[in-house]
Image (cartoon, rainbow, N blue to C red):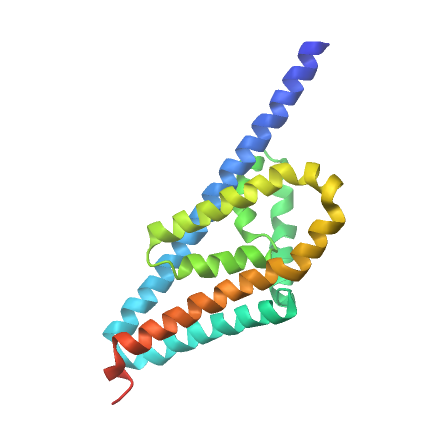
Length: 197
């Protein structure tokens, strides 16, 4: 009887480990893709003067997103709706063999505005490796919360909700604004001749 309980607990630990390993892989892959895509766009804008305004508008959009998070303390509704639609399709895969690890990989598509904001930061990190590392660090930090959350939730529920609702999203929005402002400043100061023609 005691052995059965232990082996059942071991199965839960293995499933949890598979899920979190898959989640880190999914985050790192998404961060690498986002950074590679944005790095490619940045390279194109340095090669083609006509694309320079597109690059600037991208940073203005990121800054607007960050400002909205900072002021409203919430993500745009369409981000949450898109993530929920994706999760509706992924949920049946969890029951399949190896589905827990696959669900971890696909966790990067979950309806979480903070995750998508972290992807924007990873996209601005400067390369695929840096983007993957940025998202892996985000995954490790959020993994601590996923593991300790149920325990902490019972003890600090009201206090944490208030802090997260008021400041968590605002801090993420402020960070997005800062990264976008830095990118805009670097673009304007490093090649001012592109704008003065």
